[in-house]
Image (cartoon, rainbow, N blue to C red; front, side, top):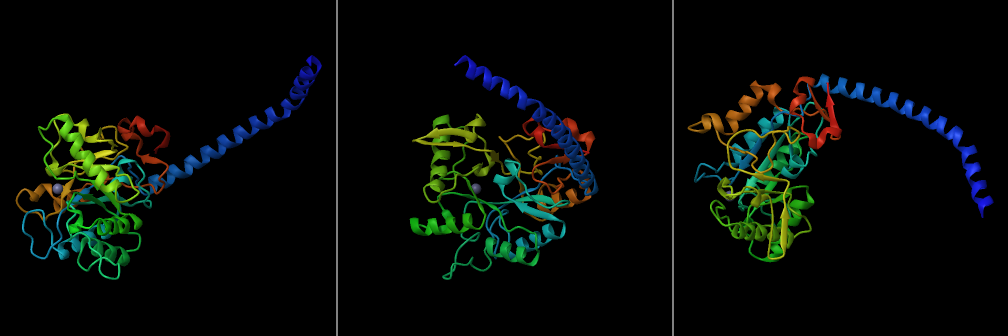
Length: 339
Ligand SMILES: [Zn+2]
């Protein structure tokens, strides 16, 4: 037994020497390759002025209707005009789920924009008899603009409630969610009954959020990644909206979205707060919207291009000018690519 063991040992020793040398040579070759790769990547990032710590507009839409009835509604023409502008200014839509998880896979030099739709109104999405989006719904317009502008991804996030695009039958509800999820659209929670969560006890907050969560998971095989709060009202303890459970349903979101009124921080910025992500209402420059809605903020981001998120084209790295390094989050340091 002893002889067998020592025999094995000496054989290993004999074989060990050259693999060790090889391993060292391989490691140094790998280090050189890696250094060269980083050089190439930083040069490419600098060329497009990548700034993946910059700001991102998360646009908030409600109904898309011919005759706007309130300050949240937009007409199909206004919606189309905004999408055309986004495409012309090198924005590429990403979903809220992709944004909060840092998986914004868009080409170098492009800027992410998150399109969000609240309240699941039929004006946002309905299917015709042939299974295509009905004309003039938000989805039909987005699909059409994307077709005319290659690279402009037709994706968005729908924050649904029990209204579920006006569908009442479970089969119809399943049909619309399946269509959206199948095309890469993102379904988020907007609570079941659209009640304000402000001032409510934890139990009620959990119950309302969990009911909204289950509304989605009971219909399709997709777990919502984010929630948008009704009226943008946060519960007394902000964390209650992010994580909790009720009635055997638990939720743990990557982000909670509010209703107003500034561009949002990059998820790679250390000041990014998943408990309260601001959104921008889609509207022309008038009244409060002279400064705080979509047309005003898109003007501002255009005029302040170095404040805006610009992609380096590689979803695995987070590229930014070196002087911005203090703002890089610890959460993603393994992806950092300062230049
Ligand atoms: Zn709402």
